[in-house]
Image 1: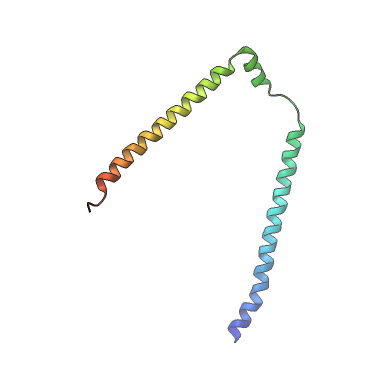
Image 2: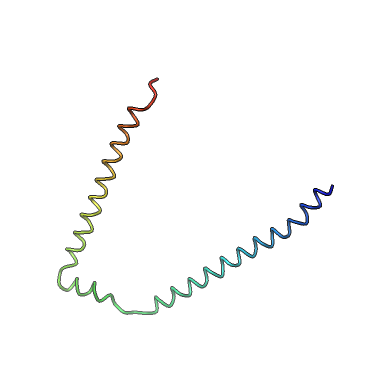
Length: 94
């Protein structure tokens, strides 16, 4: 009987602690949202991107990014292919 009473007394504390944690998370989220709203209020264009676009160099930047991403994808596919081969060799024969 005393065991049940102990659980009843601890339960409100846990509920209060959970509520306190949730309130902290909500407050933190609101603070972050307010900080980002201030950033949206600044309406300065991105000068570097405008300059690259006007010079036609933005295409060089985009091409470099595409080449890097294609290289990463090719590397991942080669690793996957090798891993499948190793798994096939090490799988138990049925």
